[in-house]
Length: 323
Picture: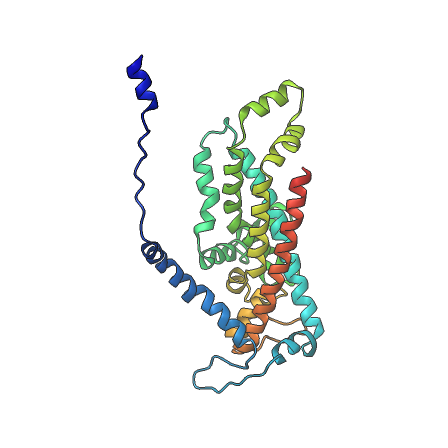
């Protein structure tokens, strides 16, 4: 008893925790900080500065400080029809991609999360594969899909739907823009699906068993249990889809080059800076190699993305709290 009592009263030995000097900690952080500063922070700051100049990007050409002239041209001096068309297409693009992509991704995640499905790991890999493909590969796939007169979509409309003269989708003012939206959704749906899958797998099976015992049907279980518990994933996917769609230009550039009413604001920024695409609503083409004006457009796009993202996050958080 005395030995046990002394053992209890003996001072506990503290584990020795090894610490490092603060300069070693900063030294380990230095590569990441340098990478962020050189490749992220500095270019962003320079873009803001160059938006007040008329720099063209042509080697040897002179440039000067023009103040707010680029912003004045964007909001006041340019064709108002072109501005409305570009902003309208950007809004339609972002809303369509966000809603359809997340709806399809959630549906596929629920299906692939089921225990009854055989080969679900293979199916997950297949659905995620477009995410790792580059814009050039995705654009090539979709050009072949919509090609005339040998593409699968063309043959489907002609032989199955009975349309005698199917339209050339990618050179149609009616169908080219929905085709680009479909390509964007197809490329990024797998990423949203993986996030939804991770959230679904964290839900305890006991909750579903209790709900079914109480007589709940599939829709009630999804609406009352699944959706509230994965709402954080819904918020993340919504914000990622909004930001990605508002900034997207690669697929539009490689599939239609901004022609046939497919140029969004992100595409217009690229076309203004480097040329090579972007038809205006008045029938003209975007004047390229105006990198000062393109920098102003990109700053406007950045502010627009920031405002939309903040508002969306506030709305999603309020909906999460209500649910």
